Amino acid sequence: MLKDFLTYIIQGLVDNPREVKVNEIEGDKTSVIELRVGNGDVGRIIGRQGSVIKAIRLLSNAIAVKHGKKVTVEVIG
Amino acid sequence: MKSIQLKGKNVEDAIALGLRELKTTRDNVEVDIISKKCRGLFGIFGRKEVVIKMTLQDNNIDYNEILTGIETNIKNIILLANLNIKFKVDIEDGQVCINMNGVDAPFLIGKSGDVLDAFEYLISLMVNKKHKTKVKLSVDVDNYRAQKSIKIKDATTKAVEKVLATGEEYKIKNIRPNDRKIIHSVVSEFHELSSKSVGQGNSRYIIIFKK
Image (tube, rainbow over all chains, first blue to last red; front, side, top):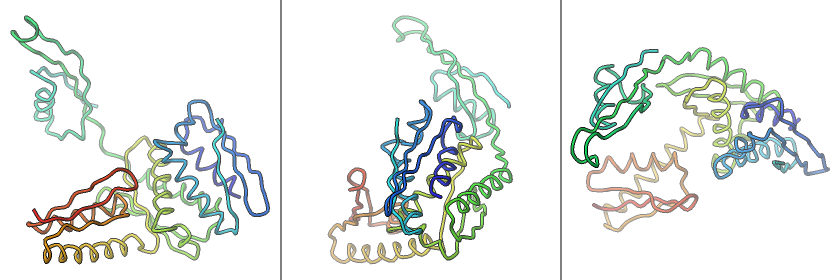
């Protein structure tokens, strides 16, 4: 659920939507989500002083909490 | 797109000349500096000359296209996040306003509006990337922002009264950038008072003081 949501958001932010790969490792309470993007796009999803990734984490955590879960979002470069 | 070439003593001069000729403002033009040279000895004697190219930007943003784009974006996000939210998109003085309500909408506010700020930031990045524009977006849930701005105005008025009575400066901490703007605008209505923001990043705060 969060995987599709994040894929959609990340694809809207990067230059190469095809290279976006989102991997969800589900746990009982906490899920870990790994984001992989094309070489030039890492900066786009991190942003100046991490502003974009901070927003992504806040929003996905809010939605995860709504569905009774917690989530950790990691960028893998 | 209309573009003209201009010569001037310096860049600002040339831009001012061009704006007069095109009858427009600085926001609507793009300026390329073509050449910048000093004739004469060491650039002290003789003529300085700058040539610039000024292009009138196509400022008629197709709002209808952007609005439908935003609508599909938000609709997809809400669908994928499996939330029960209704929303409405409007334009108010050149700013796109998105108002959401529904059972799940309060989850998008977060702690003192931080999730709402994050949502607004991400949506505006997505929309402006898709349409190659710089449209300002504001997202609100159940009039949360409107109510918050009223609260801040009230708190500021109280602070102002305190400063006027005691003459001491008053600090307001833990305020977000947009909210600081509200405080400054409230304080600016009082001629004998002034306000300024001090500090960096998250520890930035406002001081209200007598001039």
